[in-house]
Length: 467
Ligand code: UDX
Image 1 (cartoon, rainbow, N blue to C red):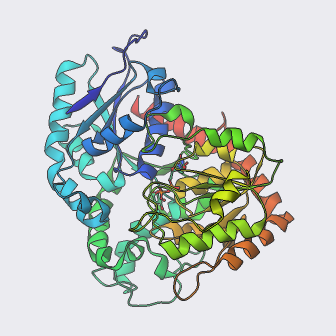
Image 2: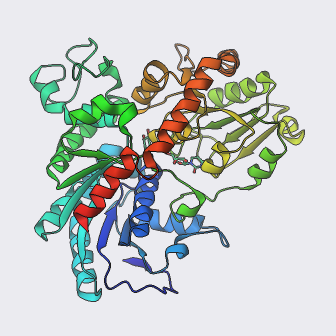
């Protein structure tokens, strides 16, 4: 077990309530739970944050010296890790397989960790907050008579689909392996918009993973029996879906920011902020596909050409592992475009700082839920390029329900052409109604987390309940 206990605490920790938080080991899951942990610390809690060893090492390697970090919360947050039991690293890439390995291997070490902590720490762990995909951690908590809190890091709409699996089975929309029997749009309730069942999250994780992922999600449903359920959303945008999940408390948006270190798997390249400072107001296209999306070489070339074709400045996050095999090869002349200052490519950006920068005009996003919430929070028009998992459903809400973005269309070969990108970017940037709605969304998102807002009230109630 690794442990990092920041030194230099000046506060007495012995009187504080102690929470253990355990995220699913992926960037889009670690970040919102870390933000939730920081909020709890600000309300006087101690947090033990449990990562897998694999993730812990990556977080530590990505830490930037001299930046605000967990040291800000010296003594209040303890970062620890336990093994994920994965002998074959490639299994970590398959959601169902990896989840099942963790389910088998991690409960024992987690129980030992809690028991050890409770012996050594003056303040015993009295509450476990676990990502729904780590539902087994809640079973460990139940066994030890500790309050159980399930945390859903994605949209309430996706949660409501997963929570409705028993009804979908009963109505024979899906079979016992999660495959569609009917392909007609699904209404989960009178107030929910019709959803294309092809967007169901387990049907968008790669064909070889669908059945195993579905079976695993069925197990995750047990977490709905927890004492409390939290999700990273806010009522105004997802009221019907939130209503469908009994007892869920929306507390979002939970945002990633620079002060959330160590919660990033790559080191942020802050040089792009200087580059942004040199660009005109509302001119830059920001492009990011989150932490997991893979592109092939043909798509990379179309994307690079498409950005050049727009004639606008662009900031593109091209992760070191963005490619689905071979290393990224950029088009001829692309290096010249960058050298001329027309574009900036970084391996990992400080996304909050980027999105809040006045030079950003719009966000070309893969529609991961965190990026979606961050885009809404910053009032940006979104160009949606959904790829897998929950992203198609998120895209639907962005484009059809909230109307704060447009989508790019893929060709039959799955590739988004450069002309399509250019056309849709132009269309998006000219659309004043979208821009106005995005600005309204910014106000609503912020109001929710400010004192007196709905998410703030939910969080306050939650704090009272677990204190
Ligand atoms: C995954 C799934 O893909 C997504 O669909 C699901 O909703 C959550 O889990 P991911 O693909 O990584 O997440 O996307 P997203 O949810 O958007 O999370 C990425 C996070 O990384 C965001 O908080 C974003 O701010 C951060 N990020 C991204 C950076 O800090 N810097 C970057 O350069 C890019």
